Image (cartoon, rainbow, N blue to C red; front, side):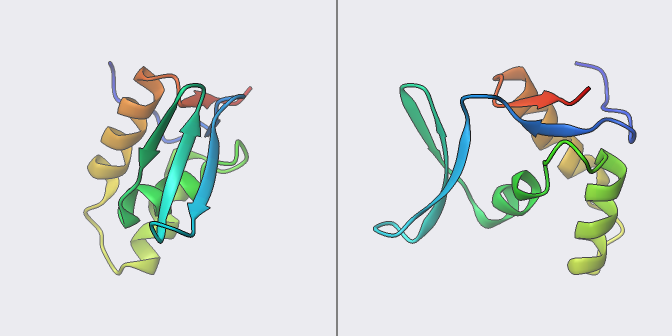
Length: 92
């Protein structure tokens, strides 16, 4: 998959939900007939995928929060994988 442009606006797919699991004390990505337990980094990225923010804005927000200038590739790699699995879609 080609690299995601910074202007791309990712959001959760229609039947995918981000939820906090009280039992596991972990964030989950729920989808039809499945669940994905998220690590804290993935949760931070996915929680910003609202269809309004661009990939560039997500990278900037997380870079400022974690005082890092090198997260661009990691954010784009995760989003590309989630798009490939149809968990994340590109907003119009």
